[in-house]
Length: 325
Length: 310
Image (cartoon, rainbow over all chains, first blue to last red; front, side):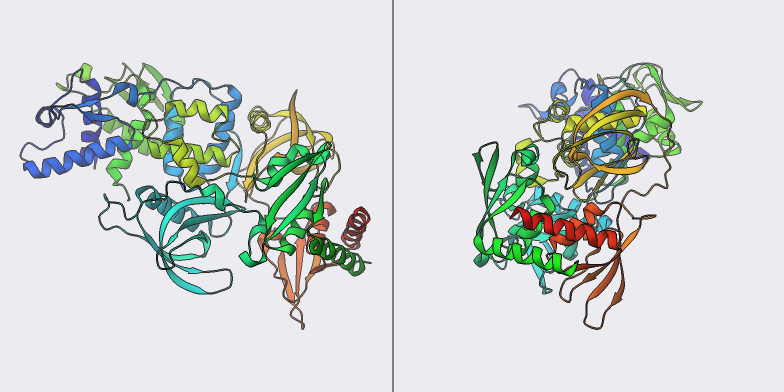
């Protein structure tokens, strides 16, 4: 393995050191690690693989009009990032927490990124005690599956998996993965279900036997719609349910809760300023979910509508008071 | 899509190249931690690196890095390498996801500044449309202040909006640790105002100001990363038939009995009555507190209070 590592580093240093573009033949002759007795085809495959791996590491390897190779130094080397002490400790906290969290799917790349950034910061800070559990149900498997799904989404490769939905029905799915989001301790995949020809949302924790199509890795299985935005699929808890049950909720958010308006609305619905507060009109699909949300986010939040939800709210609160009387 | 070990090692060494751009000394342990490997593995990696260089491979064209007495010695500048290699697209994406999960949006100054080190292959707009790893939004300045106070063992005066309280209150805390759990960040701390250990949601900390007073605290690795409820009193709850007991909604709770009518009886730990009363009221009668009376009373008071506001 050391020979391969040496060859890759030697190639990186050689390209970075060359003041002018260099031919493939010169690279083969001058970079230690390419066997002299190697067949041309084998060398070409090895060289292509090496370039890809250096590009994966951040090297901008380009070719000129004569098919000679060079490194774009500005595109390859960064100037040091100037960070305040507070920013360094915040970054340290993020790194400490997420690198140890198996449900964070990008730990390997994050570590490499932080190592590169650390080289440009002279300030040594005491480690910040921090921990993370972004996803709580089988965090290791969720982290592993999201890493595979993210790579498949980037490469536009189809995936297959078995899935048990919230009603307990299990079925196999073939999906074109468009995007992923984390919400309330769970990772979700948004993609087009090939058989059903619908864009759906899947909880990663409910998937089994996830497999990425490995055939023709360099070609795309699909094109993601140009207007796709995963943010449109992140819903509030009371927005899950059947489309036929949709209603418009009307909620008063008074001045005392205005400071957390972004956390409350998460960008959903429409806000109207009324006095020092707001009226928030937002679509919902679950009345019980809406009432629960209101209680969990009081004070400063008051349900105004729809009327049937207000009636159910009063009846529910009376029931609670009676049960605990 | 798995990379070979040699590619992983090469990427690891390349990620460290910026450290070797100039002469100097770096503790082996510090560098090993940054690389995420043992000191023995890093020593082996650096041994490999030290036989690398550029043609014609004269001594002054080799990487002049050695490990001596647990220090990484860089005797002369790295050939051809002026500084850190830019973040690859995958590395930049991982960094943005981590920052997002820590409460720093794509528009946050820290995120923007760090991304000046990203390669041109990174597309921030495309990432925003395909990956969202946000936790509950909080003030990133507050997060930085808390992280700084933990690092320097400095007490903070915070303005905190307690769950269910109409107005924020002020208290002084000795912050020990930041914890992200299922979508929100918390700081565990000794609360001087309460005289005991408390956990505060970072998104409810409205202001955080260092007091200038330092404290002693020894962090133990055995500290659990998540809430367990250990040492707290428990409330016995009855979940009506059809109302599921979901542990993630009642952290640390355990089912103790399934009643004859299929109701679920569970014991749930609670730190203060505020949270558990709110959680019970939110179920609007599907969950009943059997005991203790302090939680039953808190539930009733909250329900009556809310009824009065309708």
